[in-house]
Length: 223
Image (tube, rainbow, N blue to C red):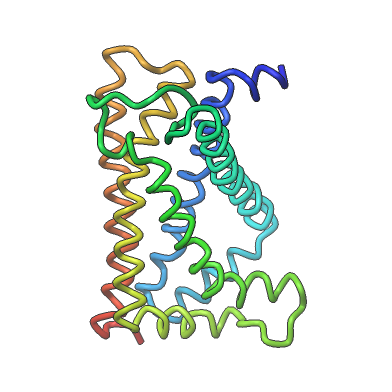
């Protein structure tokens, strides 16, 4: 079973698909919690208190781990394909010209997403959750986290970069959503078009919600 998952194209695609679904769940949770920023400091402080509940503290690292596996495994597949064929591949075979632009550029889109994840982690996670875990003296507490986010997103350069990131992520998600379900067996002619539409709607809602948060602070509506 282990060799099948590692050595077969179907097994590799299965890992990418299942770990990609963790990415969707993680982003959905992250988006829902961040929307409380629009309710002001008290609302965001309250949701930070929710984040400390045992069920959430267990669930978030699991989803994040799936996210990390998705990224690292994608990079490993890219390197393996590059060594084998000397060209970009995604789990197997060369992409047909009839496939979507997003499908042909999933590795590039993924690398851009990864770079901004590193930026996001250094700006927020390293100052909040990581410091809390390490017991750091410079930890940003729940009642200070709103100001941290607001100050970052009021910076036009930071907000514009984040908005670009959301819509790069949109391209990645619109292809990845239906592709994940296709890999696990939901690939008949009836459901594939539906899943493509659902993926576009879902990714658009996420991108619009995330963008609205940045615009909220960028245009000075935040407290």
